[in-house]
Amino acid sequence: MLKTSGLYQAPSSVAASTLVTIQAQSQADTSKVATATVTLTPSAPSPDMVGPVNPASGGGQSQLFRFEANARSGNLEWVQFLVHSQLSALNACLVYYVPDGNLILLSKDDPSPYQNDWTEAPVALGTPGKTIQNSQCSIDVANSSASGSASSVAVQLSITFKPAFSGTKFIFMNAADAAGYEPYWPYLGYWNVP
View 1 (tube, rainbow, N blue to C red):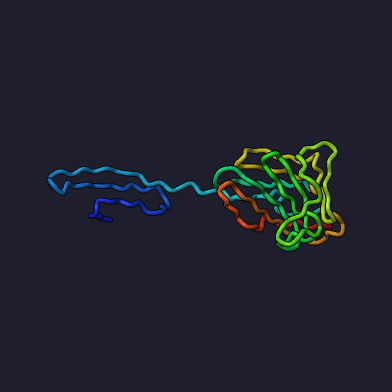
View 2 (tube, one colour; view 1 turned 90 degrees about the vertical axis):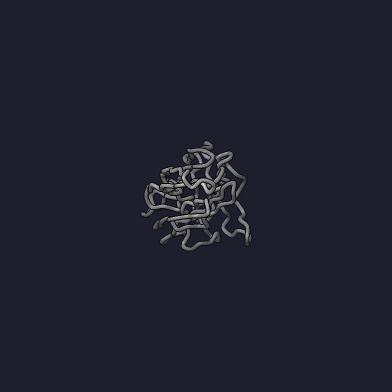
């Protein structure tokens, strides 16, 4: 594309590497011309902020789930995992993970509107002999862990679902990073509780 203003602006995105030739001509002396070749390359795709979850489908009373989260900017502030028949904290298996400290909390059965209430104070993953529970699920904290960095984490939770929580449950996640990016609960899978 020919530009006569002296300002070249690259397109906001390109699908493949593209060579662009830029030519400048002096207005004072039109015999003076310079040429440069620039390669425009596509940006690497940003990883999804939350997911995947493994396994993403299946069934059973107990399972070691692996959830992943990646910050878009800065460090992860928190990550939440929700297993329920709907996108609601009410009577759900909702876990709140804080990378700074490697801490988790489990939602009470009936959290207050617009805020979550937790079954107890935060507990560090891997704490020997520790289990936290509500009426929907229990988490074997001693056999749960996390790995990664402040900006990218994989959390393994040993979850046992209570018999009263039977049926098909959906798996959602949410997270927030230092810049305030938040994906708002994308659906990542399902689990059939017998």
